[in-house]
Amino acid sequence: MSVNLIVAVDLNNGIGMLNGELPWHSPEDLKFFKEKTEHGTVLMGIKTFLSLRRPNGLPNRKNIVLTTMLGSFVSNECVQVHNNIDIIRTWNTNNPDGDLWVIGGASIYELVLREKLVQNIFCSKMHLSSCAEVRIHEDFPLFITELFKQKQKENDVHWEIQSTEFMVPEHGPCITFTHLKNETH
Ligand SMILES: NC(=O)c1ccc[n+]([C@@H]2O[C@H](COP(=O)([O-])OP(=O)(O)OC[C@H]3O[C@@H](n4cnc5c(N)ncnc54)[C@H](OP(=O)(O)O)[C@@H]3O)[C@@H](O)[C@H]2O)c1
Image (cartoon, rainbow, N blue to C red; front, side, top):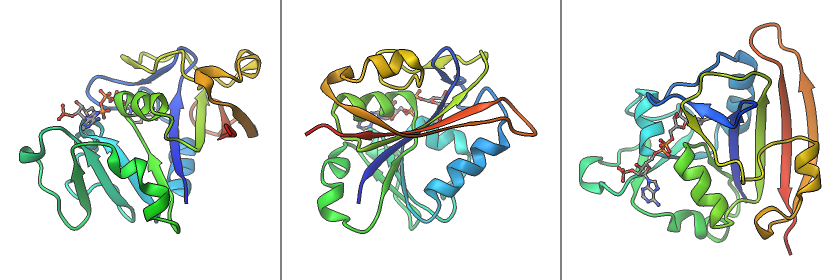
């Protein structure tokens, strides 16, 4: 159906630690991530996959992992290993009934945005300045602020805000959930 990117990012475009962990604990965001991606297909870079420490990937999802080192990682029933992004390019034609969720990390987010392969972005803006060691490039249309609204033509792609919801969870940082749709024609 569509290629969607899902990301959580802090106030300084931080998304993760070098060891692959997230620099915050947010049960509400993990719940959101699970609700969106469960029973779908998730695509991730090998570093993100290895940081899960699950040889079968995320449960209840088809897992696709990208690495250039095809010989080192073998596909199994739950995890397909690919060495290029052709699967994303042909996703909508070959999968009329299922969404593909691009779940990171930084290199994969940047790749799919640069190649303009994404129809929807689901961004969880974490309202904190974390100790993140990995950041997404600030040119990408992921900072959901007034600034973003003035910069709709980012990367020649026209992103429309579909919904924005601010949440003050019982545990963890406040979050703004934003859904952006690619309206480029
Ligand atoms: N906040 C969030 O929502 C979120 C979500 C996920 C991850 N993260 C964070 O993201 C960080 C990891 O990001 P990362 O960029 O270091 O690693 P990554 O994107 O998970 O994986 C990078 C690897 O993917 C492979 N790859 C990349 N592009 C490829 C291509 N075109 N074809 C084939 N293989 C390709 C390469 O593997 P080879 O070197 O083996 O070829 C590359 O080294 C961590 O800090 C993690 O916490 C954050």
